[in-house]
Length: 191
Image 1 (cartoon, rainbow, N blue to C red):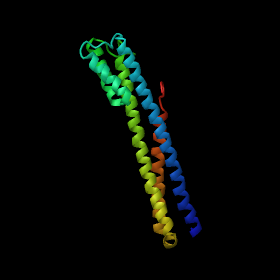
Image 2: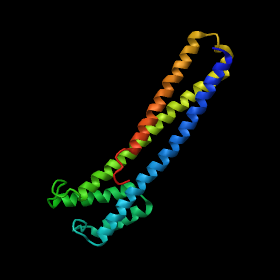
Image 3: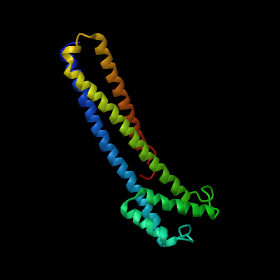
Image 4: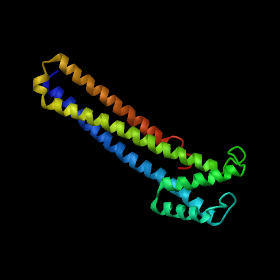
């Protein structure tokens, strides 16, 4: 390999990974916000049903406390706060003898969907972090190698090790990117 080939190889890898990482960060940001807005919407719908004291939403004890907590959580867009109230309502529904089998679109269903979407957010974040870490390391190795092209051009073993390391890191980054995008796009029934 000539110096020019190595310069192009290392600089192209760094540029492409940086571009893909930026696109992944944008996708992650918008997808997570979309899911969060959907969850806040679930909280708003639950709040309206609680205000109307619809069947299953009319807690016998501490009704006002949970209604206020839900209203505040919606205002702050606190997903965990909304989930806590939904869990209380689902437990109340279960205590009244209703299960997901007997009431398939009830509060237990809502709680399960909420938990699923929160897990989806967690997976997307985790895969994005992995992808960015692998990409950053690959970019770093490529840029450092770019600086020392003159020194490594005749060292076949070192050159091979660097290229293989960059390929492995790039592959791991791409794998995490693809899995993260897949996780963000799968089973979007209501989102």
